[in-house]
Amino acid sequence: LAGLNKHSEAERHFRQVVEIDRHLYGKQDTRVAKGLAELAECLCSAGAYMEAAKLQAEARELVKANGGRESCAFAHCLCADAKVEFLQGKYSEAKENVLDAIGLLKQLCGSEHVLVAAALDQLSDVCYKLGDKEEGMLCMERAQRIHKAADELAAKMRNEKLTKRREANEELTKRREANPYREGEPSSR
Image (tube, helix red, strand yellow):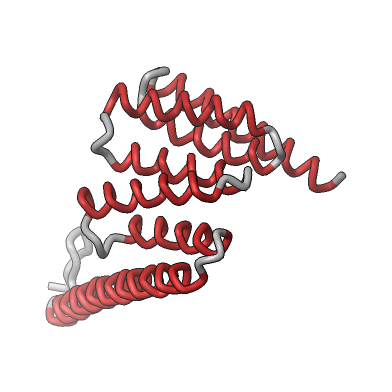
């Protein structure tokens, strides 16, 4: 019963997100498609496959109408379709959609992008379900390398930002020490 309540609560949340997005951005905006895909995934995990499939189709058509097949939003739809198919046990169809998404993401973002890594993680799961453990392992290892490189780059950027802040604070401290009187404070002269 607790699991059912959590699904109901999650479904209600995702439906609210879709309605808010429709109100804020308009019914034809691609941001609505993401909410529809997330709602579809939630419904699918609760076993409502038919409604999930309808929502996925609506999301896909919305993206096609706005950004066509050459967009990250469409790749997201392909991955979301694959999640629904995966949960339904349609592993071959899921694999086809994830492979299409990976190809599109590589073309749009580059082969080392974290979105490609996320799709590779998804492909790994599909490959394992299809019994191809070797391909699943290769996908997982490739995804891990991309995630690790992205994490290292993010850490480097954070460290550079912190270094610049520290240097700026040190410079400000030196200026204050050199001129102890600040604007707005009376001088002792």
